[in-house]
Image (tube, rainbow, N blue to C red; front, side, top):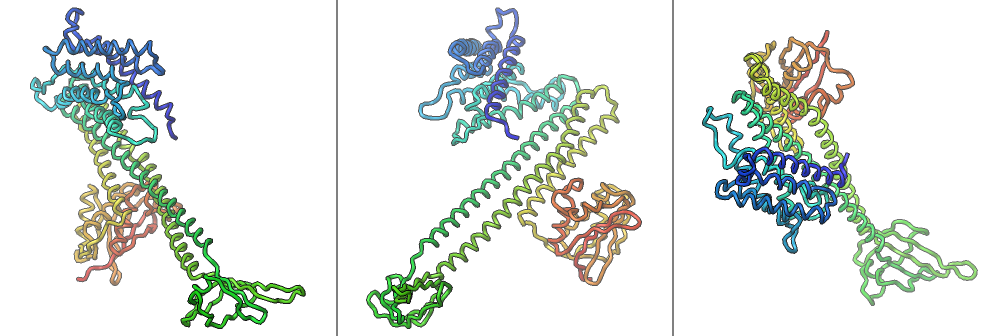
Amino acid sequence: MRIRTRDLGRLSRLTAGCAGVAVAVIGLVAPPWPPAGALSDPAAALVPAGTALLLLALPGARRAVRVPALLLALLAAAIGAASLARHPAAAVATVLAGLGLACLDLRVARSRLRVADPLVAGTATIALVALVPRMFDPTFPPGRGPGGVMAPAAAGGLLALALGTILARPETGPLRTADTVAGPGTTLRRTLPLLIAAPALAALVSALAARSGIGRPAAAISTGAVLAALALLGLVGYLVRTLDRADRRQRRLVGELRDRQEFAATLLQSMNEAVMVLDANHRVIDVNRRWRELTGHGPDEPIRIDPQLPPSGSGDWLMPRVDGTAVPVLATVAAIPDEEGAPRAYVATYVDIGDRKQAEDSLGAQNAELRDANARLEAALAFKNDLTSMLTHDVAQPISSIASLAELLRADWADLPDDIRLELATKIDKNTQRLIKMMNDLQLLFRLDTGSVTARRAPVPLLEVAAQAAAAAGADLEIAIEEDLAVLADSGHLRVVTQNLVANALAYGDPPVRIAARRRGDLVDLVVQDSGPGVPEELVPSLFGRFVRGAGLGLFIVRHLVEANGGSVRYERAEPRGARLVVTLEAAPI
């Protein structure tokens, strides 16, 4: 579902208006009171600045609204300038913010760059310089935290003011959807909110954790969880954007191939015809220039070949040439009747089908390329849809679990006993490791999809690989493998295959899980068997597919790695119950 441009504009203006209200409220709370001392503090400028932002964010703001907004923005800049001696950093940021609001609708002559963009960027930079050090406050000993160039409330208000100023004009802001050439100003406006949001959100989480009185581990876990979630969302966005760009390239390729096909068809239809006129006794009367070119005759050279007529009607024919060769043509013979209906002359037309056959071959090759391009496009679209579905389903669960557990740990840290804290932290770590494994599997999936995975086969002892898989799984497995049994495979690939098979058996089967191996001539079967219910019959044909709901990427990676090492993998139903996954590889010489 796509969001319309009008809805994005409303969302942008609404966000800017809310930011203006929040800045004004911060300005009312932050300055020292009574009001006599408020004008000496740059935080007092947040009240007129927030009000000006709210007025400018109103849809369809007219002159009656813009003039008061301009005056309030200049008043905020003046208050900031008045406090330059006592609060230099906050005063400079306030002056830049006020001027940015005042110049919001001004542009540099003959360019897309707004005058307000560098002013707002300067305000955001100074506010971030004041806020970012404080996000590390929980990691310092009590009473020895990092300082700042201005009060956190003033810095937060200025940061919100900068973000609201960017969003106040949706037609030129980061949510702009018009398909125009993006310049430096557009890039700045699109990236500045992200640069502001990431450290600001981390700083807010760290500040809330520190002010709530919880310990440094909880603050670090909360901040780390937020940053990890932001990084993962950025990665998902990058992957989806990359797949969408590949989709557009494929569509452009299909269009180019279609244009070539139409051009080749036009050339084919515009070919010249060779014409020969004969009398009733099949003596040549006249020929045209194309006929002479086709048969190898000069412009005035007498005809030196037997002008035999092809069969009546039309069909393929080999036209003789003066050099003894023949050229394939499509020949058509038409009789010119006299008054009595008897043939008095014949007109033979020849179309050189040598070039046409060559063009047909070329078209066939282009059609093959078009089919390949369509296949790649369909595969890319299916891959994008499958990847989006998998990420939405499988990635959202651990992220949601991490966020919930981190929020619980932060909110109830003081009331939770140590064993519950350790349990919650352990669950957060488990979900984080699950995300890390998922990202590693995705990287390996992309390498497999591009064909960049190669196997370096060497003798690998199976007993050692099985023991490593059991240790990695942290479970008590039954291992029945002879010590001298080895296969020819890439050791790293074989470890990944065995660990994925063991993980699949532990996740979807029941104990006991057994790893066994047996030799069959020049081959070795490595078997991982569980005692669970087995795989449903309807899932067996697609069990080793790329995105099978409930199986993740593990079995797809297993199949490709085994095939890269010259082997095969299959599923068998165990008796009386259970699933058997059998990997067959070449045995290593003893």
